[in-house]
Image 1 (cartoon, rainbow, N blue to C red):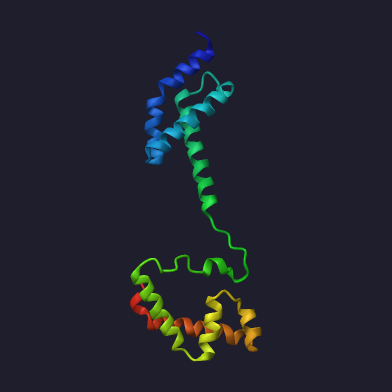
Image 2: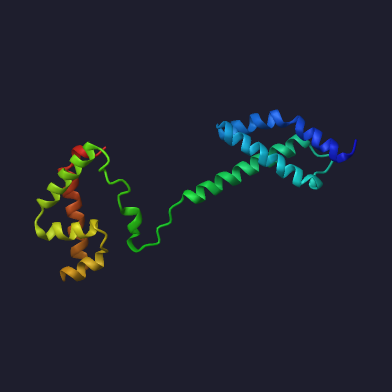
Length: 169
């Protein structure tokens, strides 16, 4: 039997143990089978790098663990949102409109009613901010200092939170 055949035989003999380890890592049957397949392919591709007097089982399990860690890191990187807008606009906007449920549409009506109860000095800058205008743009349109605009939006937000404290979780 050649060394290539012995390598493949040893690798096939570990498939059950590798599948169990993959399942422990992923906690999902399909992902575990994918991880097992990736590990087997990587081991076969790197067969020439295996030194005969090294712990074969440990070598294969290390390959699987490293593949899992790399896949996890890649998934986390893909899920990370990087907001490069000024004032972090995209991170500050609401991702859920709340209009999908009857409760949500009722809440929107209550919020709109509360905002409309503000005086123009607070309602206009707050509404513009919610609509996506930057602080500087609001200040220019209203011919007011930037600090005044920021303060009015801050106080409007605080007042709105106080009025709608029943909706806060």
